[in-house]
Amino acid sequence: MQFLSHIRQRRWTTVSGYVLFVALMVAGYYYNITFVQLGLIDLGTRLVRMSETAVSMWMAALALVTLIVAAVTGMTMDRRGWSTNLRTRLRLLFGVVCVQFALTLIAPMIRTVPAFGAWIVFASIGLGVGFPVSFSLAIDLVPVPDRGYVAAVITAIAYFLANAIPLSWSVDVFSQLMVAAMAPGVLVLGILSFTHIDRLDAILDTLGAQHETYGTGRFCHGEPVRTRSLAFVVPVVLMFGVFFIDSLGFLRIIDTPSLLLSSWQSPEFSTRLFIAVAHVIGAVMAGVIYANYSLSRIFLWTFALFALTHVMYTSDLRFAALFPSIAGDETSPLNPALYAVAVSFYTTLNFALWPDLSTSETIGTHSAIGIGVAGWLATFSSTALALYFQAAELTLLSHLNVVQALSLLVLFGLAVGLYAKRMVELARENRGASV
Image (cartoon, rainbow, N blue to C red; front, side, top):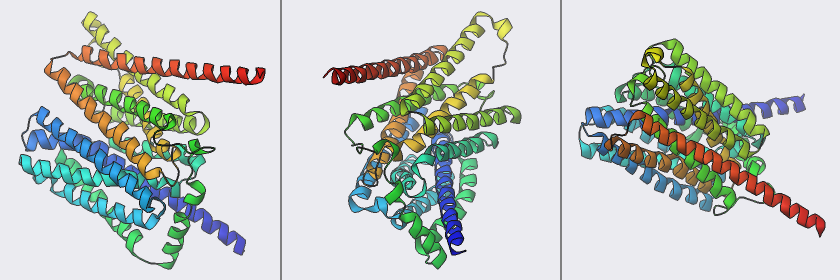
């Protein structure tokens, strides 16, 4: 009986770790894809009355400051041993959520450029600390074989909520929703961080020691992946490409009412639900592929999906230009659905990849660099290029042609690189056999 009780306690502890990690990551990612990426643009242009160019410059500052703060935080975590101290990271997250709660609450009240700039600086600090801290929790809460599946669950929930729930893309609506959602989160994190209850302490102590078992990522067995090695640099570059291509295409799509209103902002609930389900299907597919196949396989799938998506978008636009009477005003829901699958693929990869490229001694630095460079810096770069295209009055078709060309180029380059790598491996094997 005592043995069975120990097994049940162990299972309860494992499940609680999964739930905690999924809840934190879903909340954080949902906050970023709604309030930060969409709400701040509305705040700057509509309420503060800045130009889109000025808002984009402030968003660039948000990205760069976040990257710097994340890198400093990640390296500090690894050097001081915070990456293996669960209580310390929970307290850091509690501070981050408190800051974000206050910033989210006051955001709709901002009306001046200096206030907007100050908000951006404080938000950058919170985001920069939050990224490496939250991603590092994977080494305590999620076993290595399950990370692909857990990443799929996070992606599916976050995107399903973002697409299925009908919300106006305004800072006022996002602020009200996020304040209501963050209030219980602040309470729960406060209890986990500062209260001492015997049962809770036992669970946290068990979870906090699991990095000794789960701390070495899937791609670090045999030899740890170093920050300056190709094993780390190449995935960062590829993820940069994924984020860049996605942002560059999506920024133009959301600026085109005919495309946006028939997909992510459709007045028809059935259309939004269809896209939400597509996100879930894409996440499940990506989770299975990640857990059972090589890293190169999911990168190939991701770039192939983006290439196919933009080929379909540009093909539809060309067909509509050549045969307007046949094409009509309706746009196919298959394009945004396929886009959703592609986005779910790389998002699932993003959640699982950085812990699996790290050990408990490098998780802070690797997650900070990975998310900061591949996510925020790529988004800033694509935003700057999109604004240049807009100033040059590039047409929708020409803009998406560039995105299509980039996705095909990266896909072709990745395929050639993998082929060359395999040829080198075979040559070395043959040389060793002959010797």
